[in-house]
Structures are given as structure tokens and as C-alpha cells.
Image (cartoon, rainbow, N blue to C red; front, side, top):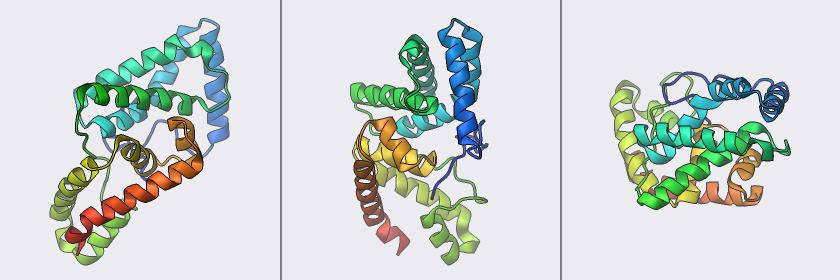
Length: 211
């Protein structure tokens, strides 16, 4: 059920078909920024703004907060760019800053976060739950999708921040287990465990609806 579209349903700025070349291009831009080329950082902002916003929005479910936190995350990234040594991909480093910024905000405000399905389009979605619904209720897909979003909102509220984070990064952003581990600062095994637990909880909460 991996989705890699942005909040408005558009494809990300940078496709994943050539991750190595993309990483190399990012590293060149980072090097320029570290040498004092501010314009190079603007290129990175344009490249990752939508995706970072999408992650933060799916963690906060508030557009204004997501916009502010995205800007805050980029400011933090720019301020600490000289500490980036290239040991991980730039986007991993940036996502870590964005996720930590969002989680700190949620902790301060004690928000109950909601899971958004705004990125899901009827075409191109591989969500297992949606496929099940589509097979059973093809003629009522639109109404069911709306109801499913509401049920998912309720189910996601019950997950802890750490479990909700891995779901967003894996299911919405399409990050690999290793990439998620790098972003949240844990082992791949922990990522797999959190995803497994989160999916079990979501399936249990949605069981009555699917039945």
C-alpha cells in the first residue's frame, strides 16, 4: 500500500528511478551551500518542499501547522547544513529534521493526530484495504472511500506517535525500512516491529467496517 504522491495528489518532484544520481546531485548542492551558495539551498527547498510538507501534514493533520513546521524544518536544516557529512542521503537527513520538528510540536501541543487519505487517488492506489473495498463494492467506491477515511482517522488516533510515524513514512512516502530507520533513528528490526504492530492495530480497528 505504498503511495508516493504529495498531499495534492501530484507526483513528487524527484522520481525514485535513479536514487543514486539524485543523491549525488543533492550532495553537490549541499557542498555548494556549505561553501556559501545560498541559492543552491533554494534548489533543495524546491525539490523537497512538497514531500516534506506531505509528511508533516500527515503527522499533524493541520495545513497551517504543516506549512509553518515545514518552513521551520528547512530553517533548521539550513542552520545546521555544515554538520551534514553525507553519511546518509540528504533527504533522509532532512526528513529526520522534519519528523522531529513535527513530533516536538505535537508533544508540546498534545494534539491528537489524524491520518489523511487525501493523497489516495482511485487510479494508481495499491492500498490493500481499498482493493478489498473495491472488489466488494465497486459501485459505491466514492462513498466508501469517504467513510474509510473517517474510520482510519479514528484508528490512527489510537496509535502512539512512534507507530504513526512509521506508517506515514512507509505507506504514504513509500520509504524503505532502512530509510525509515535512518529517519527515526532506530534499527530496521524496530521499524518492522512497529509497522507490524501498527498494521495489526489498524486491521483490528477496521475489522468491523471491512466485514
